[in-house]
Length: 220
Ligand code: AMP
Image (cartoon, rainbow, N blue to C red; front, side):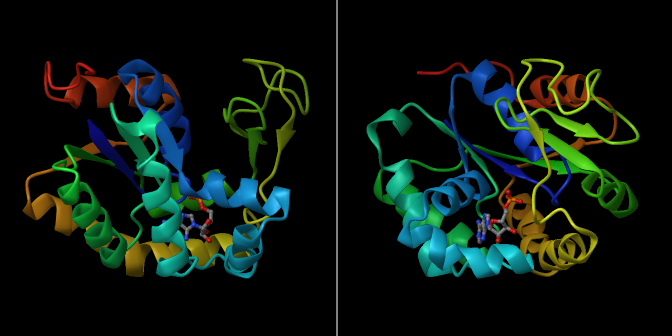
């Protein structure tokens, strides 16, 4: 089973992906997390990605596509994956389709989490994330009970370096010019499932689970 989570930065893809991947027994692959890990570990991949991430730009396709195709060909991905943050443009979508096609597979559903632009800006500025379980908090709207600690698991909360106002604006620009065309792309082939991304994390999770076709997501 191959699912893509599509949506703007701040739409809640990462948060939803963690819960959904657990529910549906899929391997969660988040390209942003893979790049951040590579950066922390100081690998060649991390160095290639660094300047693009700092500016809120997309890491070049040849680097990103190779990283994802390697990851999805690993044995643990055979029973299904949930892609979060990939593809982010048409080139990446085509490369993914071709690679899956060669394995006799195809994307089943693209879950598009839709959130109004003004809400995205508000969510991203003031966002704190749990380093351990990725639960997001907001300094004003949904602060943790204890400052700096995750309510769910006690993990340390941190702010992403690319969540500053200038980089957030760039990331949203990039999303609207390069990634948003994927909405039409997947809608045309009948794979798009549009979900209202407003409301609590649990509300949105339930909307997604209710909207997924019955029986289709029984894992192999
Ligand atoms: P994210 O955590 O998904 O918001 O991604 C953080 C950053 O990683 C992005 O702003 C890009 O610089 C880079 N990145 C993540 N996914 C991709 C992708 N599919 N293509 C290119 N760059 C990406």
